[in-house]
Length: 164
Image (cartoon, rainbow, N blue to C red):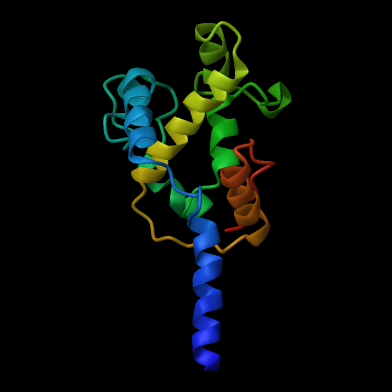
């Protein structure tokens, strides 16, 4: 009896993580299209850092297939999104070798910040889909509950926190 209660509790916690925690196939497909348009020239079509422009760059592009080795798996969406966006980088920390895609997406969306975030979220979903590392992230119940409430209430999520 105790085993069944424990199993039910564990499955319940796991379902909280799954609700809204995974990107849809459509978001991943759209993310791949964005990746091919904006990122593949440097990072390569598979994200391995071997794009046609990579030999001409002073800093080799990252192999995006192994981001999970550095950041954990699943990837911390907020960290990866901030890096892609690039607008929040502090110039005193040195030059940025990658384009500031947030500015480009902002201009292309006529200043619609929601569209910028959607594009970047789709790119992050695609990057998550190409990771080769093992899934290592721990369950963050606060984040899972906020995502569950977001899906139930159809409101934007609060700050996403991942703890690998």
